[in-house]
Image 1 (spheres, one colour):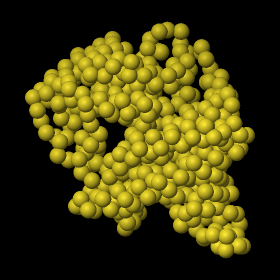
Image 2 (cartoon, one colour; image 1 turned 30 degrees about the vertical axis):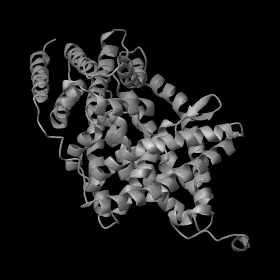
Image 3 (cartoon, rainbow over the protein chains, first blue to last red; image 1 turned 180 degrees about the horizontal axis):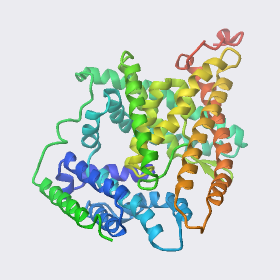
Image 4 (spheres, each protein chain N blue to C red; image 1 turned 135 degrees about the vertical axis):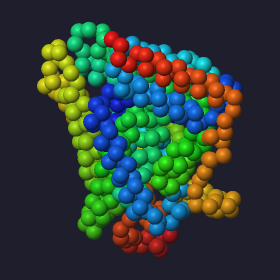
Length: 239
Length: 227
């Protein structure tokens, strides 16, 4: 999961496609429309169109197709139980259950793969309570560092024979290892807050400068949104 | 196994929409309860949220299966109900962005994990006068994980029961299959999480007991002399 996330995170900042140049706000609106259609669309035809639109977005977002496949395949895997339980002998029921999560997850991949996280979280932090908005930024910021430490810790535990002891001891060892990360997290939090104060932290973390800066690339997002809305209006009630 | 990996479009509207609404209300109440808490706490919460995500990503090898931790009990004990709920909401939101559980399931995920987190600190504090920190944390975590795992199981069972099948696979068969797969995982989850919580609290009690709530552990006789 983390490898996928770190690659997507890198591509979100390093990508050079028109989607990357578009504002986060317009992409959030398009993504919300596509995900709403993936969840609520009553017809298989419309679901197929949503899936194709989401796949086109993800593949033109400058991400390797394998990465798109991994990110989108995970929800498909978890739909398996529901597909099996709702199977009525036809192909339409499984297709309907599969296309919904695939359309939504491909849209999410496109969104996070073309939008750096400060711009992605900034509009969300405007509507969430202040502490939650701040926690979104701080959690994501700490994630990769803690993940690297956790991986290093696990490797060293393994190299020193920590994985060959009985299961009960292994769990206690894992807990003690995680406790070192809790300590690190606590100290890191204190350092980070002191740094934030030194930099003039006013009580709200705000990635607010860029997320609504419009550019010519937003016309492309608007065109995609118009196409999606038109397609939905035409296909919503059609059998 | 207490994070719902159910993607968007699978659960019915009447199940996820109230879940999301209730989670947002609880989130508002949690933010209100913590409005006088020191701002510094947010950075610590962020680090613990990141640790939850890191723990969920790491595979703990246990014989034939790899287990992914949720740390719901320790987070609840260390942060309390309100801050614990904020942490699991943020973790669920970030996971939704990477496709681990849909956006529509964020509310249910936060409620499932948050229920365990909310329970763990009161339990820990109730157990603490009779038990050392490690055992109190392990027991509190076992209960928290049981609650979260039970709610997880309930949501999945309801979702499966509601799937319209046309006689090919009866409801009882689906729920029995779920029980056959999920109940052993449920038991494994409770055992693993409490074992890890035991080690975590034992280490913290030795090194930074002030991070644990409740009465400070009494130092062993001669420990100060040895130090």
